[in-house]
Image (tube, rainbow, N blue to C red; front, top):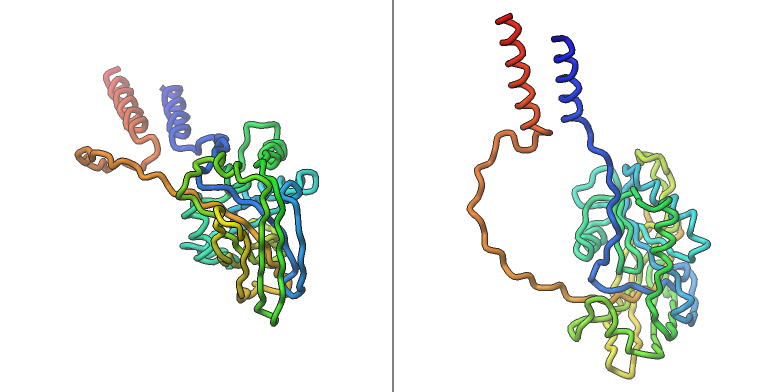
Length: 312
């Protein structure tokens, strides 16, 4: 009888215990690629022309100051940053958030609207491949991230970016692109005639100090403080350039803002056919309890064992 009690106890603990973490595979986003990454310190004017082939991989990280798993992801990206030439941009969770002051509602909403996720950590490579979580089926996170960061987008041509400061918080951003071959556009995942290309200024804080962050980092790097639309680029015209006057958002602390030029394709979302609704199921009072049916079965076995013992 004691053995029966012991086995039942083990089964109950197994039923209500935590589940094992499973690696979530990287998948394509289908929302359009990101490329670019030219940048200047916000308080210094400058101009540069860069070949598309020399641009870094754009890596967006969805994170939070309380997220311990995010630390594993970010350290893995740091470890391969130099050898892969990737450039990190960290979006901090802000919607319904009380523990992280580094994000903004607008930037968090943009990430959710584009990629459909709310729970960190999430990493997106060049806007086209998304990897959730911190568990990998590869040899290591570094190995998986290296493979994803080195995927070629096969874009040829050059980009010119000019930043002229007009005050401590304002300036003029000008951009132009000269693609050698526009045929690549038709090969983009999900691209059609309704897709569009925009130029954006991403305002990034090099490091923000938040001692109360419970994941222990203290200094949080690559914090995206603002995303400002600079204008739509008409890929069918001969003039693939533009400029805009912008006002910089404030830094969380310090004076280490930089301005980055990012090109973003927006592929229209597919319109899904409406599903025929099934009659609503009656909600079970046990819904949401861990392994409720198993626990119920164990209770029945336990009661039967007691009954058998009384008969003996």
